[in-house]
Amino acid sequence: MVTAAPTPLEDRLRELAGSVPDPELPMLTLDELGVLRGVRLLGPGRVEVELTPTYTGCPAIGTMAADIERVLHDDGVPEVTVRTVLSPPWTTDAISSEGRRKLAESGIAPPRPTRDGGPPGAAASDGPVPVELAVRCPQCGSTATSLLSRFSSTACKALRRCESCREPFDHFKEL
Image 1 (cartoon, rainbow, N blue to C red):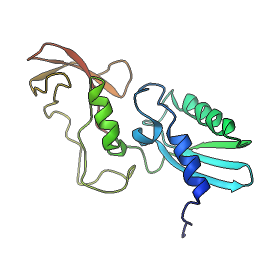
Image 2 (cartoon, rainbow, N blue to C red; image 1 turned 90 degrees about the vertical axis):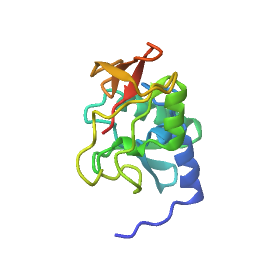
Image 3 (tube, rainbow, N blue to C red; image 1 turned 135 degrees about the vertical axis):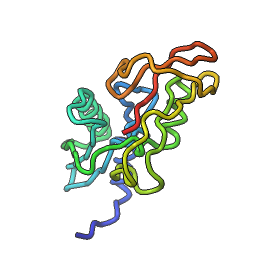
């Protein structure tokens, strides 16, 4: 099946939808997080948005959908449908380089890339994801860090501590 290139209106609507902040990581937009999969104009005043949650059962998906609907309604789109798309699954490779920069700037160690190249949201390849490699401290840059808890403020983050500067920090887990 061949899909048509997005229209200028679809590009603008995608930019609006993508500018919505993530409810759990408000320093990132949905586009930077890589959960916005597509925006399609279905007809006059009718738009469909596709979102892929960071994990199945993510409690923030409803808030993301409501925020997207509000932004597009405010822009004059009367009918907005937000669909959850689970395939291909989201991976941390979908986080943009700007998103990774913002995570680090906010004191959250960004996830390491799990594969080379490929489109955002594509399934990881070449075997399992390494999970016990050194994590760099976002405050001082040291790789001498230790795991305090596999879970932090959200299920997608772990709590770590830097052994050099002794500061605790969140680490966005690789998926």
